Image (cartoon, rainbow, N blue to C red):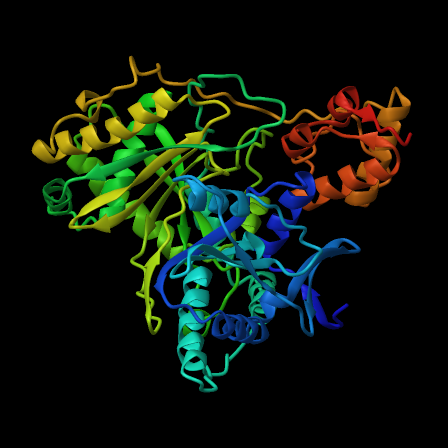
Length: 531
């Protein structure tokens, strides 16, 4: 067993990933994959040497996550073995794709290294797919690019019989985690947090019409449909005079789609930012990406040109205040919580950046496109600029949305943007909508916390009340107090769930993640087989 080099607190993003893993153990929802299709004579030994050097170089690839008292920590190991797993697909036209899907769906245990798996799928003597699968807690999309680029550089040297080297890294991911915590604790982000308090006050959850009831144990598997916006349409919309970017155009169309689908004039989206503002972080493997909310008001009588100008203003403000880690933003704003939705926003939009080319001697290397398989948000629009237009996909959670609905979503997003380009002053309420009659506007619901002083009436309520008192460090808790209204967070919820399991009581995870009281938890709890 490898020895521990050192232990430091996890980053905020890693802590969230650890929490989700504890709540849904055995899930591959947060696996992150990328790869290359390699044609030509491959030197497997050179590839193995390159992989070994990469793992030695990036400490985060030798890191595990575990709970240490009341905090999640990253334990960096001195060394680990990360083998190159050679796989031969079975017979049939879908052999390689089936193997990729199977390998991508294998879950990780965050307490067991390695959290990076490297597979070489050999379909013929001169045809391979190099597939890298890592847990999201250890990397992001940029990390996959860094890994592939460095592997290609090292492979080039080893294949030529040389001893290749890479520039020494100025810092490691654990250094970033420490710095991130210090910045937040210093109060340097207070002004940005206040911006979000003002920007998101009164924002309502996105209430989409579901095709199916939400299941008790959601899979979050994705139903995905391709989208494409012609180059002339994108050019016309970005030339409206507002200085809008392709992302802003996509977001404006997405907001109109979600507004008319939900019947809400006020919608909140989320979008990812790279989270690598310092040059020293650009070539580092790690989980840097941050999720940023974007609130957009969509008035039915407003022309698309006016909406696009407002979206541009809000996008610029969101980017200017994107330094607050999403996990801490949720803690600070304490939005209304529910087990079946992500806080602050339930729809995501992402604009993929162009990937760098990878060159390996004697080989043709082409990126392997891996479609969305699981979705943390109910709806996701993922696009990139290609050929002057936009291409990509829209996905929705298959637990609650049918393939026909997702197909109509894709076609509606395309059609309304084409119509807006033809006449930017057309009211957004008159743009094409292919999902049937739009829902009426959702009335706002005001909620008020009215804590009482009820005492536990059953042994189960008493046990949960004692656990709440422990994690909140108070003498007693009324059984009708709201968990998140009291200042609860996901880490406290996990501590209560895991401690209750140790005591022979299984608390429903979905309920515990949403706003709940002791009495509600106790009513839904079940004794474990050990009790």
